[in-house]
Length: 496
Image 1 (cartoon, helix red, strand yellow):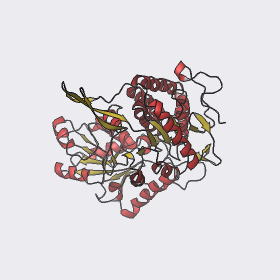
Image 2 (tube, rainbow, N blue to C red; image 1 turned 30 degrees about the vertical axis):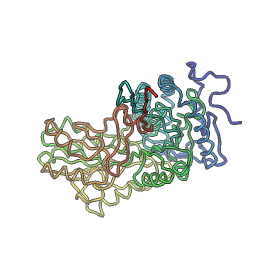
Image 3 (cartoon, rainbow, N blue to C red; image 1 turned 45 degrees about the vertical axis):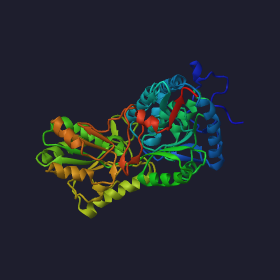
Image 4 (cartoon, rainbow, N blue to C red; image 1 turned 90 degrees about the vertical axis):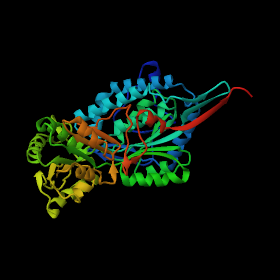
């Protein structure tokens, strides 16, 4: 028998205690039991290319066991009250706080981001859990007469498969755990093969608070995702990842008519008007362009600057970006860590190779990284491309690495058209001291989230998702909760 995640006589979280977590060994969690697989694999620390711990490689049998446990658990979990589920989410958040140091250090070791940014992600995750603990989807009374009452309500879907990306594994796992469990579904997490460690530990810790089968996690390779998307007894897939994989998820879900929420890639424009205080906005814009080594779907990826301030702006932008220290996330004061994995490293390196081939003009950086000898990590110096052609790859593609095009604009209608000229529509922003002007421009941008004088603001109570190829459906907020539910209209005839 596999070891229980709440065994050895240690009281579980419901009674105010948590069993000590071991951050050295990693297992699947199926029905609140820690399970192994015949085959294991390991990932690397992207800052050093040293091996991280072994993790399971799950197959069909593991998925079937987890789905069966989730379906069994759903029968009782779906009958619990929102208050009871909320209490467990809060207790789970408290327990994560108790292990904040462990999760932050583990996150840096597997994802590569600087330790300060890892702590921020863990803090955001517990904020999300606490916010969702009291969030509810209200019933709507459509009609209430002497004869009848008609109520529109939302009921849980059943078993959800949550597919987590490698850039923000802690927050984006919690961003699916919180709404799925709030709405009385059961959830099976599939972490990215590149960053399985924190997600497995989150599930293991969750077993101390949630009944068997309610929250589970399976680690595996690239072939594990299709076992989720094609499984006949999984009712919904909540996926965060690339556009190409999102299309495959949607196609695979079609034969069983699974519900899907897809949060996919972005190529976010930021439009800088001629009336901004350049010195005030530069630090914000630089941070929002290079945070997490630019490996965030809603980072600024196209920076349009009015021609009248362009020269002064790009000089100040380059000067500030030069202050960003590049290095391992464990080093003091590092702001830009490594690209997370070799696949993405090669993609970003290919874009850097185009600089000379295409005649792009680097305002900063642009050098190809040295060949990657064992132990040196996947690092790039931040690069700023000065006014490249609008149809160049650096403008039309999502780099997901620290290389940014800065472009000139003159005419308002023209820059809005350029900002919207993309298959992607995740986020966009306008920066101006004239709020009316900025709002007018912002309302014309084709994106799921549009900001004025900020970018990448997110909150648990605010719906988040993309337009066009950047996704289908929304996460978070009440609208996000509804995505984990079936709508139902209840007709109550008061007399026979």
